[in-house]
Image (tube, rainbow, N blue to C red; front, top):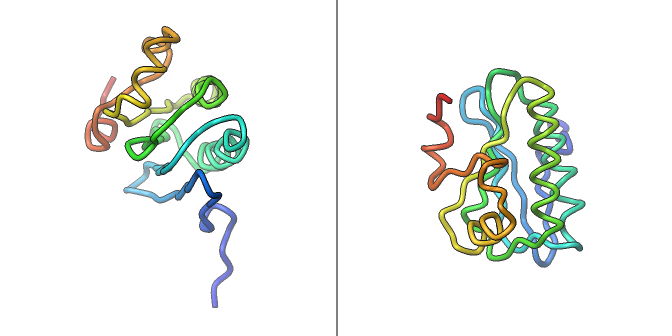
Length: 128
């Protein structure tokens, strides 16, 4: 039986489920649930591990289309991972058309700092 790396084992808590997959050369982190102070640390670990597996110029995509809540600690995680991605020569692209994610991003004035996409396909095909 092959050994699983940590990224092959999904993070699952009562409020958050995180799974990492690849599509071609792009690493996608799919998140389901709530991102708050109690779950933000686990999400940050998963995103950092996924970023370590990302090879520029391919992006890291955080698919938050199934996130029902994101608090300020979750926004801070996204900003930090985005900053690290830029230092690495790549991008963090965030997927979510849901109000539960877009509204806090807009309220915090972060729409310019985070690359938001309405769909996974949009994030995968963004050439900017």
